[in-house]
Length: 211
Ligand SMILES: [Zn+2]
Image (cartoon, rainbow, N blue to C red; front, side, top):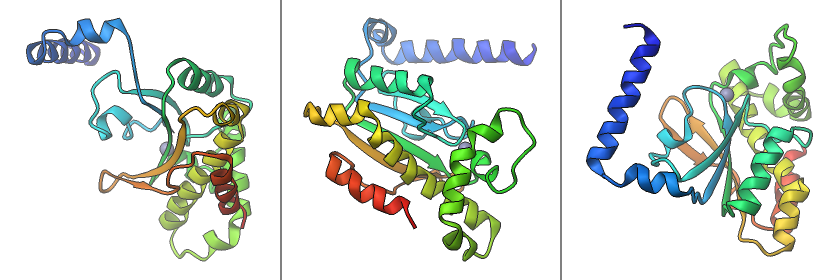
């Protein structure tokens, strides 16, 4: 049996197990999705949201990219957000970074690459904006993990600055933004920003982005 056959067998076992636990599981899932949460996370294979939140399918609408970025020019991310906010009517958007992030480390050791370099330009800018804070940390891992946290806060500011989100608040939709960090060594999530639910909350977040 090759590796991919193993994956198909794992899927078959999983589907049987879900059906044994709840005979209506797939019939209910096929009807509709009704997630309350939208997740913007890193593509890292160790930070799978349904797994670390222990949620079954149907509970979280997901967009992932290298270093969990919200970029005003990224139509992929913007279309996910538009669908999440205005069609699924999610109540919470979580931007989640993580310790030991390769995308964040790229901002310290710029790799020679065609696409990764331009993608991490925004993180490089955050690194430069917070140079004195980061330089004060003694070890490389601490600097990288601190930049992961600063990146999450900056991405929450980017998210709040989008007209998609501002319009939702103007229309009084129940929508909060949350910046979290996941510790790969402990499996624990930590809240970095609290709930950002209005333009006035956003002003506070913006103040954290400048040094
Ligand atoms: Zn990462």
